[in-house]
Amino acid sequence: MQMIGRREAIAEVLTGRPDSLLVISGLGSPTYDVAAAGDVAQNFYLWGAMGGAASMGLGLALARPDARVLVITGDGEMLMGLGSLATLGAKAPANLAILVIDNEAFGETGGQTSHTGKTTNLAAVALACGFKQVATAHKQADLDAVKQLVLEDAGPVLGVIKTGSDELPRVLPERDGHIIRNTFKTAITNQQHGESK
Amino acid sequence: MKAESFSFAADDWRAGIFTALKQQGVQQMAYVPDAGHASLINACHGDGDINCTVLTTEEEGVALLAGAELGGQRGVMLMQSSGVGNCVNMFSLLKSCGFPFVTLVTMRGEWGEFNPWQMPMGQATEETFKRSGFVVYRADTGEDAAAMTGSAMRLAYDSNCPVAVLLSQRLIGAKDF
Image (cartoon, rainbow over all chains, first blue to last red; front, side, top):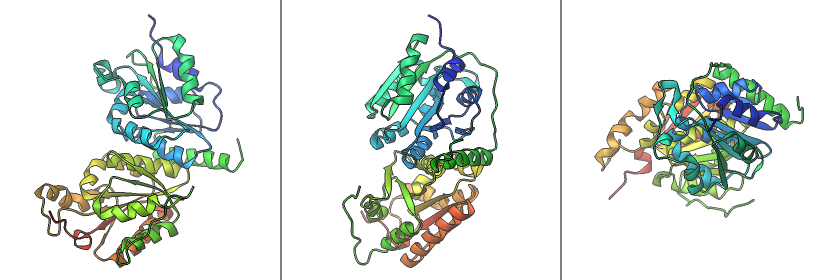
C-alpha cells in the first residue's frame, strides 16, 4: 500500500481555504508542511512550545467562535500535550479541529519510534476524551473524509493522517514570534471588522 | 448565557481580585484548582461573560491564554505555586512572541507549611518566574492582592509582558491537616 505523502496531504486539506480558517502549526515538520501549502497571514507557526498547540487552538477557538480553528501538528507534539485532549473534550468547542500528521516517529531528532508507532492510538484517545468525531487516513482514498472532518464537521474533532517517516526538504517560514503574532493578529482582526482581504 | 450567580463572603478579600479582573475586561479564565482560589473560581464560573477552562496541567493554560490573546480576548490563569515549574518551557511562548500574560498564584511551601513536599517548588517559585522574564508581585494583604491584580493586567495587556501575582501563604492561611 502506497503511503500518503505528508506535504501533498496538507496541501490537499488547505487547498481553497477560506480566510476564516485559522491554522496553528505544531513545531517541526508540521510548520514546514503548512508553510509549503501557502504562507498566508492566517497561519500561526509554532517553532517551540512543544505540547501547547492544541491548547493554543482552544484559547483561539473560544475567543473567535465565528472562525474555524485548525491545529495541524505531529504525533510527538500531540503526545507531549496528551492531557490537553481531555481539556478540549471537556470544553467541547464546536469550531475546533486537530489534525495529526502521524509518522509514528520523532522526525526532527533522528526518527526515533514514537508511542503511536508502538501502542498509542491518538484518535481513540480523543474519542475517549469526548471528541465528537475522529477519522484516520491510512491511504490516499481516506483523505477526503479527513478533510471534510477537520474543515466542516462540528468539533471538537481529531483527524489523523498516517504518513511515512521520510525527511522532506524544509520550508522555513518566519521564525520571529513577534512578527508571526502581529501578522496573524492584524489579519484576523481586520477580518472580524469586515475588511476581508 | 448567564450562569448561576455567586456571592463572596463579606470578609473574603478575593472579591477585590474579582472586581479588578472584571474592570480589566477578562473574558477567559484558566485554572488548576486550589483551595485558596476556590471562591474566585466559583465567582468566575458564575459570571456569564468569563469563559472558564479547567486544565489537566498548568502549561496548557499558558498556551490557551496565548491563543485567547491572538483572538483578541484578555485572560488570567489561577494556579498554585507547585504548578509553576510545570510551565517553564511553555513560558518561552510568551517571551518569543511578546504575549501578555497574567497569573495569580496561591503560595505553598513558605509560611507555616505542614507538607515538606511543597517546600522545593514553593521556595523556587519567585526565582522561576523572574528567570522566565516575569514581573513578580507579592501580596501579603487582601488590599494589595486586588490592587496588584489590576496593575498586573495593565502591565501585561498595555505593556506586553508576563506578570505573576503571588498570594502569600501568610495571606491565604497555612493549610491545617
